[in-house]
Image (tube, rainbow, N blue to C red):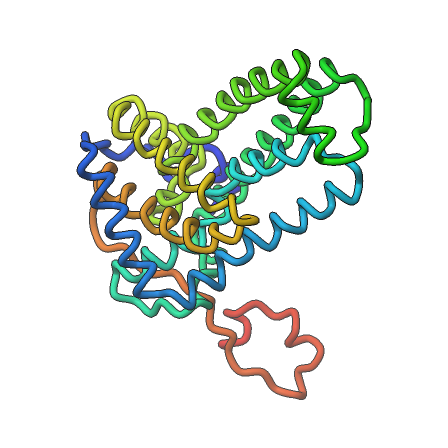
Length: 298
């Protein structure tokens, strides 16, 4: 795979797959299939999903410890923007289960062997940049209204936020602008990551397909976005612990929604797996540590 595969077409004459029209019932069926995947692979998805609430709690602790309370909510919202990256292992498990392959937890990391892995990294980096820009924007909104004032407690900050004109402006502007960031992240990634796992395409093709999906199915996609937002809010309420259930279900459901809205690739979908390590001999040490797989087969 050439270096241009990351963003430019992965194959000469690359064409976007056909996007299908779906209804709200398809959203419901995707959620049912996602829940079924969750129950079929509970130990695996919990292992992966616990990363999300644990990191979230660590972020919350760091913010409180660094006296950055005003950024607690923006950081939580920004963390949601990169949710598709956190769920990529769940997409892989659903993909493998659909193909009748082994779904043990270690296969969630087989995405690194995907032909489109570099495109996955590129798209993930773009979401991280979007999240960082949102945090900077949220901080500017706060500074524009409160300056660099530091509150002594969460109660004092909450009182200023809800009972002063400056605080209400922060709430309104923050949620409106944050909503725009969320919409941008959603339309760019709604099917991008599952598509990159499912076939060898470029990041540009995956994003273009995602945009096309939203354009052709605005009402179902709006419903799906609302379900994701509601699920993340509900899962975040008990100190983010609920995300250990919400994230796996939404992640698996996202894979099944992709399969319903994007025409399947033609031909078989060969599984990707770690390359064979081959046999090593003590006499070859240390050169054997740096030998390529095909060199070891000789």
